[in-house]
Amino acid sequence: MKNKNEIRLFKHKSIIKFEGKDFLGEVGIDGRIFKALTLARISVGVISQQAIENGLSVLVNDSDSEKAVNCLINEFASERKNGKVSLIYSINNVSVIGFESKDYNKIASELARNNIFPLILNQVAAESRVNIVVASSQDEKAKNIIEAEVFGKPKTVHLAIFGHGNVGTVLIDQILESAEEIKRRKKLQLKIVAVSNSRKFIFDKNGLDDSWKKRIEVSDHIASPEEIIALAKDNHLENLIAIDNTANKAFVANYPSFAENGFDLVSSNKIFNTLAIEEYRSFRNLLTKNNKHYLYETNVGAGLPLIDTIKLLHLSGENITRIKGVFSGTLSYVFNNFSVRNDAFSKIVLEALEKGYTEPDPREDLSGNDVARKLLILARELDLINEFSDINIQNLVPLNLLSINKNEFISRLSELDEEYQKIKENQAPDHVLRYVGDLHGDLHQEKGELDVKLISVPANSALGQLKGSDSIFEIYTESYGENPIVIMGAGAGAKVTARGVFGDILRLSETK
Image 1: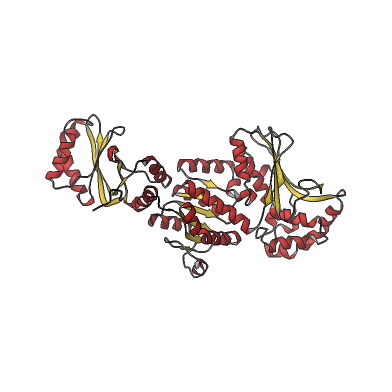
Image 2: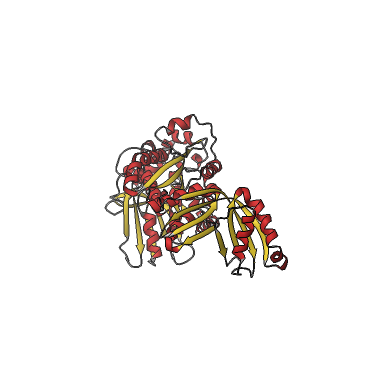
């Protein structure tokens, strides 16, 4: 005996569609359909009317679709001749999913998040019974989503992770270590189904485990976001999230394709949010169109809740007048230490590199580009249309060291020592060096003023008292006046950034 709450899946079906006008509601139409198909020995399933589309749909077995179309063309020959029925045709390779639910709207929302839109919906209100028809390529995915909603089973979220350097590797370890606890507490099953670097990738629809490093070493799959998207589709995976842990300028070109193919996105890569404003806005529109989300909290404050705070203030109507602070955990570490120690500037930069605080090429930090990108991201959260070229950046790297390769630059770091020692010694008493980003000006206009530069501040000031690799952000608003909202904490390091990315994944997973 079948459980009435059982979710039933019927494959290999076809929809026979009528399109026309003035025949809906006409007495005897349903009877003629059943009679004609019965005489042709064709089993009939759901009949559904779509008044808005002036259409009517009948469900039959795939093997009977051509026969059913011809049968009904003959039966409704006069209606086709007088224009009441304009088309009779089949949509093949569909499946029917039947289940009981008192809240179909929630299920419909979850299906839509995964780009599944039923071709036919049939509801029996008295029995809370629902039948939906979906493309066969989506039936297993739809069934999994419905099961999670109807039976309260753990929701499976499939993760594709791009980049497994410092941050990526730590993130994978964090997810694998926490997976069982998250499943127990939050009813979320996080499955890492793909890991990719710039050369190759691995994929496992059942989820990767601790052996992923060995597997990617021997993988012969050439890195291809397109192939990972195709594999996710072929394996009917629902609740997809693509995670970008690279610093790759070319990789962000894949973001639109991910969004169009059912993926939400999480990124620690700052590049996309600092592209030309047209691309920035176009992608936001694409996300809205596809009902997808893009989270990037770690773009500015690593694990600090900075972007969320600014979004909430801005959306609530609070007038933000200035944002200023030490945006780079890397340069925070460098100047916090250089200001109070007798060590050479180059020694401290190398320390930051060894601790994993810097980008692989320290010039990305020392050039000010990293801070500038973060400042621009915050400007755009305030709906300003500044471009990267609008930012006044003080580059800490001499011109003669900008064009050499990374390894040579690192070997010649000591060439910076004399200049920065002079800057340090020429400060006022009890002052320290800080590399700051400053968004200011009339922020009611289309553009603000963005400055990134090295300054000297009193050692007893909020900026001057920073320690280690901490970052500090001062958010000035109309309501708070001269007393800024201050957010301060760890601003660099693989563990901190990975934890922030993990937080974005969980936030997305719980809302999917």
